[in-house]
Length: 66
Image (cartoon, rainbow, N blue to C red; front, top):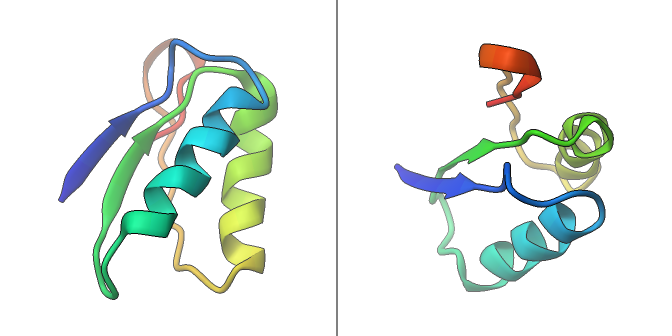
């Protein structure tokens, strides 16, 4: 599984970087996304679900979503 650490950026940069990753992703490929920005922690899982992707979340350390 590929790792995508988006914790250094604030919204909307994490979503932009995720969209770029999705463009090059192969069918069935999985990614573990780490988010630090509060807006991104809400927006990105919702965006992925709307796009038909399976999302599994777990709260990480110090307000991070993985």
